[in-house]
Amino acid sequence: MVGQRVVVRRVLPGETGPSGGPAMTDLLGICESWSDGIAVIRTEDGTRVEIATADIVSGKPVPPRPPVRARISTREAESHAAVLWAGVDREPLGEWELRSVPVPHGRLLKRTNSCLAIGDPGSAFTEAVDSVRTWYADRERPAQVQVEVGSEIEQAFLDSGWQPLPDGEAAFWMGSVSRALRSSSDAAALGEVSVDGPRLVVRTAGAVVRGGIDGDWVGVHGLHVDPELRRQGLGLAVVRTLLDAAAERGALTVWLHVETANEPAQQLYESLGLTEHHRCRYLRSPS
Image (cartoon, one colour):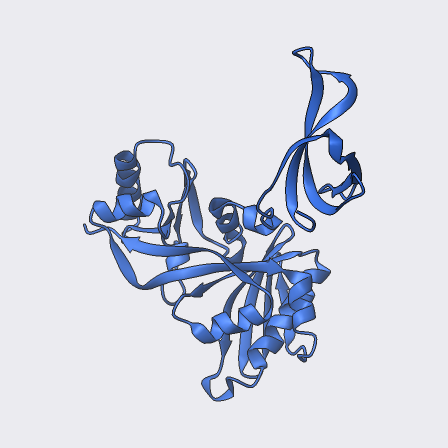
């Protein structure tokens, strides 16, 4: 078990348990050594505990604890997207969120003109769906929802006849800002940073990327490189400039959405140490 994450049950010498027998306790940590009658367990706070093997009643390996970022719920992760867009009408529906842009500039973005249908809507599913349809009908917009791929909520919408939108599946990637900067240390930082409250824009000749800071999270959105300038490192350069600016403002975690069919973008973000957290899909009401 040396080198593994383990949980051991041990006797506490000289102490009496509730039943009158020896007192026992469990200890979780990494087994660093097991020799000469002594086991050394390093707990998650870094403390090294020495236990006489004679006092160990039982022990077994347990799976590694997931990284902190991997333990964040899908709903919490998606909540950090709101800062990227100003001027969006938002209304809670339980844990769901209705979203619409009153006066759109250019095409309607799915993320700002759909209901974030993740979590508990606070009512029966059919009632929540009726509320979604009514809310968007009042705004003369199609009723659309953003759901987590493979979730019970997605299946309920599909069973109700809602249809996936073309190009409507995206993965949520996230990672450490500091690791992303280390991973891109060989890339030149390019572009001028403009700031509008929590929103940042980095522009250079032929490339642009946008970001939004929410607490110690920074979202990356809208990376565009002119077609004739692609595959020359320009996208990485402006993203690095954005992350530098975000780090100066206290950002620790970077996240973004990338369409699952966009392999070049996935390769870029994987090179920065980001990993996929979950996937979302957009569905539209049949009515």
